[in-house]
Image 1 (cartoon, rainbow, N blue to C red):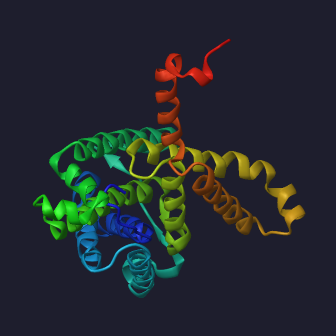
Image 2 (cartoon, one colour; image 1 turned 60 degrees about the horizontal axis):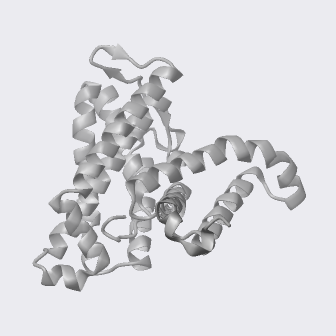
Length: 285
């Protein structure tokens, strides 16, 4: 991301958001609107705590630490089965926003896309603020950022807090639009899928994350079902293994041939067309 910190625990943040909102709304009795505010803050605090290892470790070691956090959250969900339903899962009520109940797929799409646009706008404002510039300075060089007077520890912790808030917000929407949640929805493969989305779209870019998400969702819902039966028989793979194989192949191809992702490719194309008349190798003859 913008701070250059690897996380393989975002599925856990999503799970905490989903289960927290389900408990607050259905068992405690809080309004859905209030859960939209409280739950992201709670998940952000979890992210803040998980950010402590980022002060001492980085790279793959930090990723493994956050992955371990995901396993802990999954076991805690099973342990507190009287609240979470354990391995059997938990039924979740429909979202009711200012008296309007989200009751069908179109309502779900409208709710999700509306809040997704709001999240993108908020993320853009953060990136263009002093906070975002501090994040990017840490990503580029911690030594240079520290020499510039940036508090490395403070901004790393804030990075995890904000990231956890966004994931918690998504968890709230997921719980109240799918109406059922279980530990199977939040396994390590989901965290890896998030990494694939970012790599495909373009690391360190909001629009890249959006493009990567759209690409993977279209692949998952259109391409894979279209060729799954024939290719799984030809390659002797199970249906679930085939999906993992395809996503792994996509990630490998992008890392090798297009490391800047889809958004990076678009930026290069845009720059090329701006400079086109002055490029002697590409002039028409």
